[in-house]
Image (cartoon, rainbow, N blue to C red; front, side, top):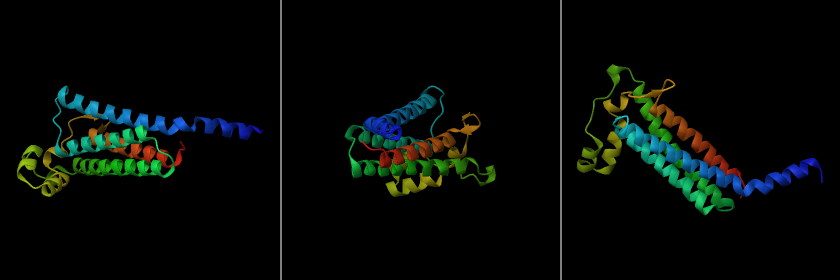
Amino acid sequence: MSNSGAMSATLNDQSPWRRRWLNTGGVLICGLGLLFAGYAQFYLKLEPCPLCIFQRLALLALGVAFLAALIHHPLGWGAKVYGTLIGLMAGIGAGVATRHVWLQHLPPEETPRCGPGLDYMLQTLPLSETLREVLTGAGECARVDWTFLGASMPEWSLLLFIGLGAVGAIGNWRLRR
C-alpha cells in the first residue's frame, strides 16, 4: 500500500467522528452564546432590544438544529438535510443581525423612533405585524451599549451566525459518517 493509500485509510477511519465533533462544537458554541447573552442581560444589566431577542431565538434554533444533527447522525442525504437546516437557521440569524448592524450604523438623524416593547407588541398586535415592527427596528435597537475589540454585540452575532452556518452547512454536506 502506498503512502497516499495509508493516509487515505487513516482519514476515512476518523470520518465517523468528524461530523459528530463538528455538530457537538456547534451545540456548545450556540450554548455559550446564549449563556453570554444571559450574562450580559442579568449581570451587566444590558436590556436586550427586540432585535437582540430575535437573534437569541435564532441562535437557540441553530443550536437545536446542531443538536438534532448530533443525536440523529444520519447517513448520506439525511446529513445534507441537517446541513441545509443549519444553513437556513444561521441565515435567518445573520439576516436579523445584519439589520441590527445596519440600524446601529445609521446617522442619528435617520434613526427610527423608539417603539413599544416586544411584550406589548405581542399582546396587542397580530404576530405578522409584530414581526414587521421588530424587523423595521426601533431607536433602542440603534443604541450601542457594549463593544469588544471595537465591534458591537450584533456585529459579533453576525460573525457567529456566518461562521457557524458555513461550517455547519458545509461540514454536514461534505463530511462522511
